[in-house]
Length: 202
Image 1 (cartoon, rainbow, N blue to C red):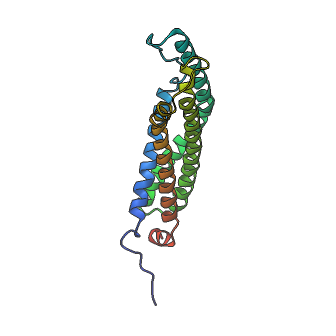
Image 2: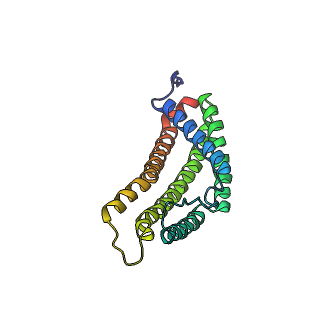
Image 3: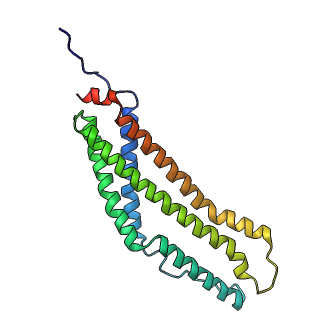
């Protein structure tokens, strides 16, 4: 009579998957806290110094007002609150399920899979919003040189291109970071669902 022995060690890749799950959950919690503290960033008009001619200063104010309106469409407070209501429970549930799976609780495999799937949905929503913000910033940077020159004057292309690159770079890095988080979440979800993990907790 033979009996199946329980593997004494964690399956390869599971420890990393649990670390990824915890890190992604912690980032989501941190993001929710940041959103709650900076929810009015785009509601306060930025100060415009008196270093520009009156016509250019007026054009800049109008351009900034349009930019703020577009950003508020993307980062609508109700939308951000709804996203926080989804991401915070998903993050907390992920941490709890990862802790239980680390203790070899059989049901934790299923619950962590659900939690990571919910976290993946949140990450995809974050990516969509980041892309929308990037497009708004791209439009803002491309239109800014034209907004600062008098009507009919020529606009130098090189400074405008340089300004666009400088302004868009942080948002482009955010997009790359969001894609990396989605890839990490998919990797963790795949590792948790491996048959070897189910055998380890059985």
